[in-house]
Length: 320
Image (tube, rainbow, N blue to C red; front, side):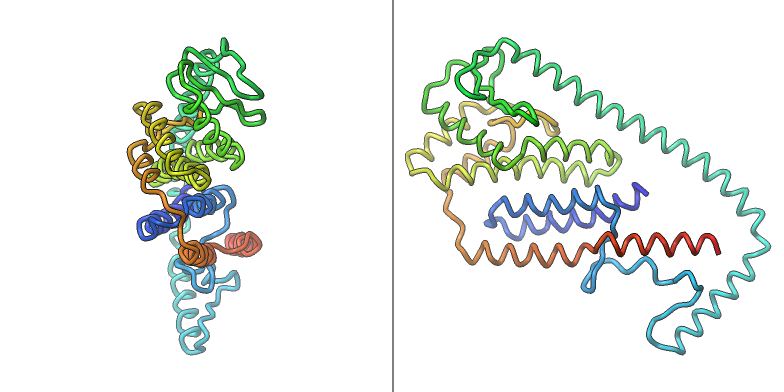
């Protein structure tokens, strides 16, 4: 089940990656929405399909044992061939059952391998969170949910239900204001929810390399989206100050993190270039990106109701 969902989600993730490459000027919040579709595909087991879908229907052969292609002669021929195959295969039932025992053993081994990987991801996340929480225990409250900390070298948000902003000590007021604007943008966008959720899904589908690539790109796009949200209201001088703050707070980033949302950890060089050359995207670019995103969403998804019908038909097939 997980493997099948993972494969179809990989196709959707690949489509999003291609979209990112073709529409580099599209607002990053649109890209984040597309990553949300990948997340939905991983959470809900509906298949990737529609009238203009990129994958064929998985219930071409129905539980009645007949095929409906719309061409009666073809339908009759395929149905007879299927009946003949089923008749010939009947004597092999005993050997098939023996094979099923071996398959069950292999399946159990794979389950424990998957479980071990999931536990490693969960423990690594918990250890990372505890280390960070211990570092900020002695922070001094600046105001509201904003704290100054001597033990950190880059700003970040920590917390899901009650997010707190932590800022390194020794920064001037201009840099602090740039940081607060960026981190508040994260909070308004609920990124302190989406990034941990993304890591949770990565922990479940850790065996799929495409999901690792998708998560890394998601983290980058989240930061770019927040930069864009802040930059659109800044003057040229303020943009220069913001870019300088990014440079001053930059640090070698890890490829995969669940927390926190760090100000200067992801794609700093590219973010500075984007900030200094930032221009509000043209209205037609936004509209075109939204239309293509909608087409992509329709082309690569179908309703959960259809999936339930599909599963019901499969159960009937196995029973018959």
